Image (cartoon, rainbow, N blue to C red; front, side, top):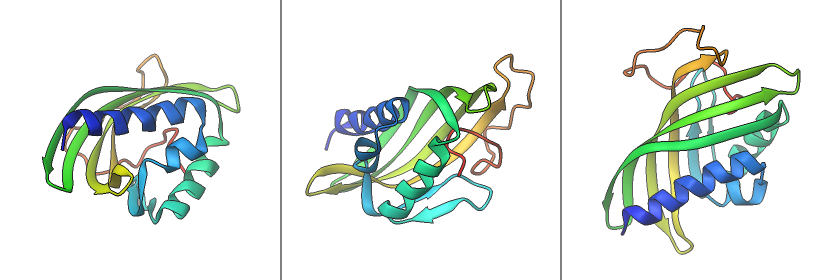
Length: 151
């Protein structure tokens, strides 16, 4: 029941995004997990989550997602957390962009270790890398702007 285990889970997730590693990314989710990207983009079940992610990732030539600060609260076999992320991306069209946001997480301990039971993305900025876009208030609910996580 350690923060280190959750931190490793979060970092495996981001590493899989950078390397477009489907198997590694899928293995960060519980079988009955939920992924909420906002704007009606909520999907349930690891297989459906993976399908949506694969579709989203085909729109990008490159993505670098880094994990910033985070918090974790664990209680036996479940927990919650919040992790801030920063993404640099190049779309298949050649357009480049930046996304800064956070994930509100729920974790569950499985026989295979800690997994995401739910992730809800809240974007604070998504747009041009020169920061000419609009920033969102921190209390905004899950995002309704575009990121690499868009389905």
